[in-house]
Amino acid sequence: MGFNKQQLALLEHNVLSTVYLERIYEKCKTQRPVLLEVLERILETKFEFEEIRQYAGLANLFSHLPQREAFILSDTCGNVDGSTGNPLSNVMFGKHESIIEYHPIPVAFQNGTSKLLLVQYDPKKIRSIGKIPERLESSLTFIKTGIIPMHPYAHKIINEGQLSPTSDNCLETFTLLSKRSLVPLMNDYQIKTSLPAQITSEIRTIDWIVARDVMHSSNIVSQLAQKQLLPEKLWVLLTQYMSQANNDDRTTFLIRDGLQDAVSNSAQKGIPKEFSPITACSLTTRNILTPGKTLMESMIEFGFDGMDLFKEISRAMIHSQLDLIRLGWIPDSHTQNVIYLFDFKRKKFAGILQRDAESEKLQLAKLELLGIQVPLANDINPKLLRNLVDGDKKLITLYLHHTIYMKHIVPMANLLHEKYSIDATILCEYVQQCLVEWKQKNADYNIEQDIDLSDRFYDRNLACKTLNIGEPPHYRLIQNHPLLPKHFD
Image 1 (tube, rainbow, N blue to C red):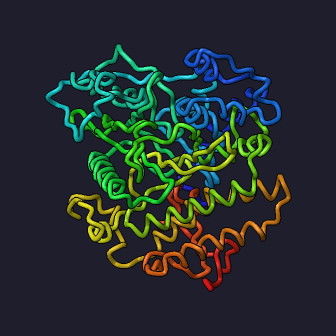
Image 2 (cartoon, helix red, strand yellow):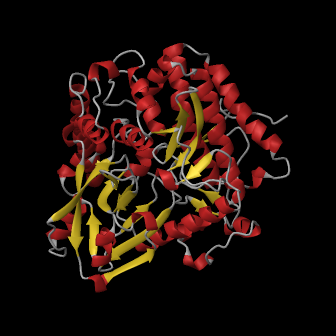
């Protein structure tokens, strides 16, 4: 097929990693993940594993969990299949084959938690931006002494060159879906670490310039919230602090807010207490808690209306993303970055939590017109601004179609059609109407300056992107796509 050595190595590594995860999935048909034992100790309760496997059992479990534990359970156990829409499934490549052991599925199944190393550096050789939130100061006092929280795989790679001190101390943490973000055992904030390995198509070390852009984006989103300009029923977790040792990107880490700190148009921080946060991809992908049944199926058994879930989530995702495009802040809202909020008492979808305030693209001119203080263009990574100045709609349209339609909406539609025999035409027509409805309600704004509103669908191939086949951004156009309206009357 013409693959080069590097591509063949990635494919071989991918096969071995996939087999490793599939074996764990098979074991979970008869064994329960150790993570459940960890949560039992924290909550001082007992989960009857066989009850979780019963009719509506998983949804019933989520209905009783506190917010933090609901999020952790969905994020760590909820996705065996990897990035939604990637034909290569779980893509995690590193210098050492052991990299797959740091995937959240084996961590949750075998140990429940993972160790985040605390590595001592010379405080004089550490640089930082931002401020540690006041409520976290007591938990993060070690940072002031020159200690860097470091992913163990990063420490292994750095130590091969004898550039990193050894570590005798560590934090016990939960490994989240991104593989490099972790939550301390007894707290709710996140530590995002550098991971010098390829996940999907990129090496996940945190470049200092990119990290600085994250801080810029958090400041912009904070201002949008203060001015009550964010979409309704949208909450965002901000990044408050970043640091690095020895000018080495492999040591960079970020401190991200916890659930109780999420910002929205409300003056009150945090997501409402009655809402349960569940990572978007965990709704429809295979999980290690109920092999053979998705969480969405369990929620329907619990009393949620499947069609209502589809409609409410589709509408919320399409409308909120178009609202944000209009504002000028375009986040990366793929199904790992978005957390759905559910009201289990009312059995309703309740809103969206954006896991971070990072940007896929920024449109500074739009933001400035709204009174948002923005950094100078030359202080921002050109990647966040590219093509937008020239009026190129391709990247934003590709983002909307691939990230929102293909990753959020299509998996739900497939499940409803295949499991419950709901007519695919009805599902497609509703999605079409969501776009028409938004355009009609925003008649004062020409959204066609941002996205292509023809019936051409911008379909991205993540396998080509991962294997570096063809030219970026690795997409094709599909004419007369059933999810797109042919007219807006």
